[in-house]
Length: 406
Image (cartoon, rainbow, N blue to C red):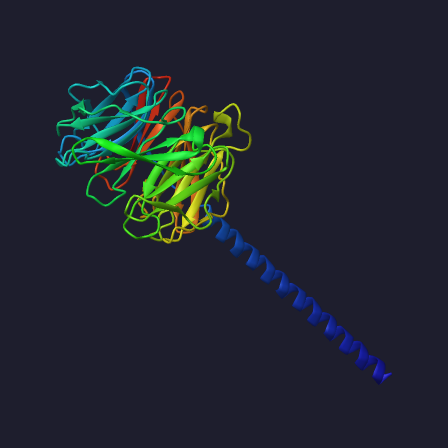
C-alpha cells in the first residue's frame, strides 16, 4: 500500500512539473512572437512627410526637369523642357520657396527636347545645357551667360549617326583632357555614342560602344568603381537588364564583370546615387512594361546595390511596387535621415511614388497625387531646410508641381 501511495505522489509531482514547463514555454513563445512583431514594425516604419504643394505654369508638354544654380546666387533653380513647343523654361528660386520665370524663358532648344544635361562646355565657369532632341538625329548645345539666359553654341546642333534618333544625354570627361564630353544612345543598333568636347562648345570624334538590347530611354554616368573616371550606365528595354561600362580615363570602356545585370521587366528610367548609406554608388531603375505597347511584365522599382568595384546585386524585395507606367527617377534625402531617398513619376497614374530609404533598404513608401501624366522629376533642397524637395512636371497640364518639405 505504501508503495502505491508513494508512486501516486510521484506521478502527481511529475504532472505538475510538466504543466509548469508547458506554461513557461508558451510564455516564451508569446514573448518571442511579440519581439518579432516589433521588429517587423520597425522595418516598415511609416515616415512622417508633410509638404506644401506649389503649381507653376510651363510651356506645352513639360517633360525633363533638372535643378541647378543658373544665375550664380547660390540658390538652386529649376529648368523644365517643354517638349511640345521645342523650348525650355527656367524658374529662379527667389526666397522662402518663391519662384519667378527667368528673363527670356521659355527659350528655344530645338525640336522635341526629351532630356537635358547640365555642365560647363566652354570652360567659362558658367553652366551650359545639352539637349537630346527626340525624333531627330542630333544633340543641341546651348551656352549660358550666368543670368539664366542661353543661346545656341555656334557649332550646334551636333548631327550624329544614330538609329533611329536620340532620347537621352549625359555628360562627363571621358578622356581626362579637362573638357566635358557628351553621351547619347543609338538604340536601334544596341549602342551608346560619345562625342568628345574641345572646351569651346564644340564636339566631334564620335565613338561607339556596344551595350545591351535596345538601350531605349536613359543613359547616365557616374564613377562606379572608385577610380575617379566616369563610367556609363544604360537600361536595356528588350534585354530586361542594365549595362555597366567601366572607363579607363582615356575614352575607352570595358564591360563590368557580371554586366548586364538583370533588373526586372522592360527597364526604362535610371538614376544613380548612394541609396543604402554605405558610401557606394547604387543604380536605381524603373521597370515600365505598361509604358510601351510591345513590352510585357510588371511595373516597379528595381534597386541594384554597388560594391564600389563595379559589381552590383539586387536589393532584397526588388522590384518594389510603383504606380502605373513609372517613367523617370530622382534621388535625394527627403526625410533628412542622411540616406538618399527615391522618387518615381508614374506617367499613367497621376501620381509619384516616394521610397524612404535607410541603411537596411526601403523603410517605407508613399504615393502622392500630382497632375496629369507626371514625367520629369528632380529632388533638391529648394527652401534651405536641409531636406530635399520634389519637383515634378505634369505633361498634360502644362505645369510643374513643387512639393516643399514642411
